[in-house]
Image (cartoon, rainbow, N blue to C red; front, side):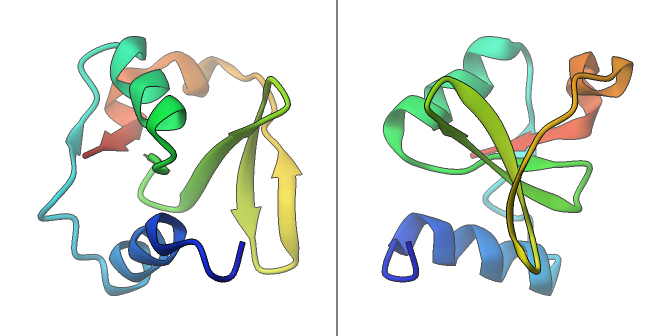
Length: 82
């Protein structure tokens, strides 16, 4: 994954807090459209989220972790998509 340009772009946006290419998700279709196109939405301006093997995962410094299903995950204002 270290050669994935879409992941690198999301990491640069997240670490520089440059979300000029991102906007708040309007609905779940916005989020899943990004997953299916190979791009990565950002959750709570804190985590890059991927979709692997029918499971949502977020990226931490020590690798990908399973995304817990909490009430916050269903709030569209927590998601940035491009």
